[in-house]
Image 1 (cartoon, rainbow, N blue to C red):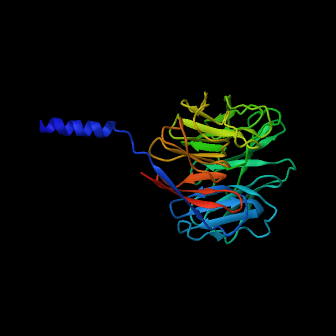
Image 2: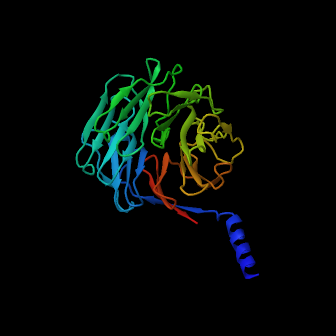
Image 3: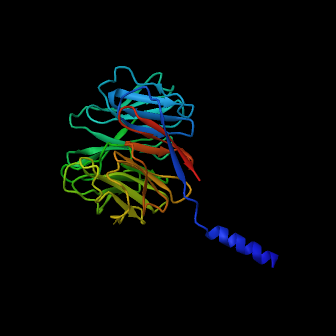
Length: 340
């Protein structure tokens, strides 16, 4: 009987639903008024942010103090995405002309331009890395193809690749640095905006591409997919909408169970409007989404959502299942604490 009771307790514990987490969002002092759309979280103490006016910020103490480490004479640049490997090494990517990747290896004391594209129409959207050596960035279509550049030496040099064929006027949204995501050792997904809201996928680090349709297509400027993320090799969520109509709740979230080949719209999820970023909280079915209408939390793999804060943010990133950050307009930075 004793062993039976122990077995029943164990079985009940395994079958009991996980406790719903709570999210505590605490504003921090950035010291700038820039629009911060780039966010890179290294761990629960180290994070970097970037944005308009050539702004780059860094914290090494969990956000108690954010240091302005912006490159000199960069006021005209808009660093829409940032990737960081440590407290000392980071790269920022510009949106608009000129198309630049700029790198620091000394915590922002000095910066070096490691890639430049001076085509007047160049517009990079986002970048991501498979590891500290190999990465990829993409931009809006030029000459009929999506712009693709890759690096295999930690961002010290970049090479332009032949990108996938593009639809007329096709590109991504440089809204949060999260319209690209890498997976495993070789896979990468690009989330496109108008006119078709396609997913472009490569299984070989951008050498060849496949295009997959999604139900989030919008034939209007300002609409489409803005962000996507995966919790495992197959399950992913894409969010977006129309940034010119932030309260519109139609076609703002879709899910895939086959690594992006097919997508199902979630029309009644409870997500409260256009979202520019989504992030999976490691270790479960919990997700966070951010946008101008606030921050949403899902505890069932994106099927339903609860608004946990109505403050608007551009992007969200997690260090682990407990800690992360949000950044937004007018220098807004907030620390995330996920409690179980």
